[in-house]
Image 1: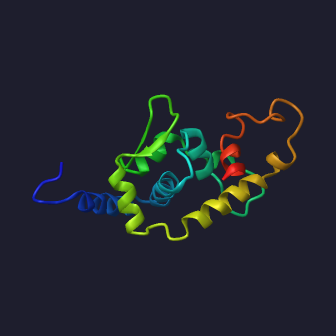
Image 2: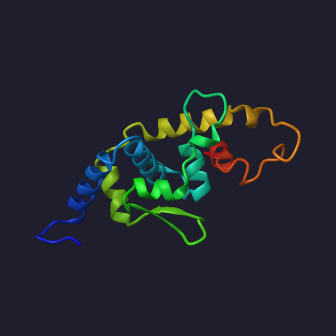
Length: 152
């Protein structure tokens, strides 16, 4: 609840400050999720976002253990993002948050970082040289971020 004349900007400031002090890798994950949700070319679904967040720039293949669950991502964002009922879209909680994030330029090279992550994903071994078998044909289950990375 916002009281004592505090506006949404103050609430966003306080929440982002709380994210910084979550501990461990949670602040980095929370801010990365906010960057993706704020700056993506189209709304990402939960699987796409989690897959993107699991990419380590410069690595040669994805480490599935590095892909966070959507519950972990939501927890690291402290309520600033939400997921539709069926996980079809991850969104900021309110359009004013997008305006706030744009004006405060928290993610200065956002599109550069997103491009690097997308290119890293496209160069992963499992994308360039799929092994025969069930993973040889890509799907939203085997490579959730592939369509976004290749189109944007």
